[in-house]
Length: 166
Image (tube, rainbow, N blue to C red; front, top):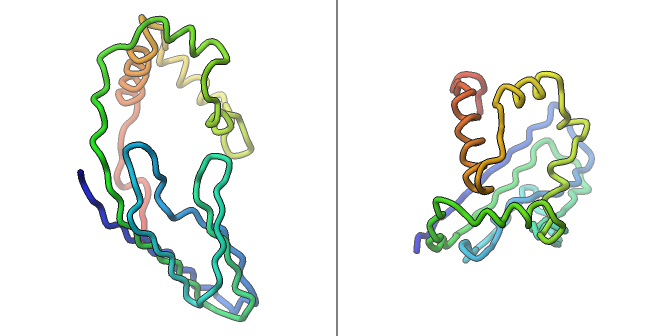
């Protein structure tokens, strides 16, 4: 097993005094069969009472408000996570998995993330890109997925200077 200590700090500095802040943050790592959160701490400055709940995708959401004047806000999370080894991915899966994918017999929790929105929509440029990939349904879903991933990887150039982070 591997253990990771994760520290994340977000700082807001306002150009003028703000009279209140209301926040919803997702800073606690997810847990699943291969990842377990051993410790989690959320620290705020200025201090505030924090409430928590899980959303429908089982993400931990922390909410708080600061009903007082302030010019800065710091949100710090510290976590210790245990990672268990994952089973190796097979080279292929049974071709019958296509039947499962083409039916309604599987969990569709993440389908909301695939729908177009004002921020993610199909554009003429994306349609051109996907048409150029010439995606074909291969022997099984995993082989097809690997083929798509390779085609996308080959089609894109990574430019480390395209963005910057403070």
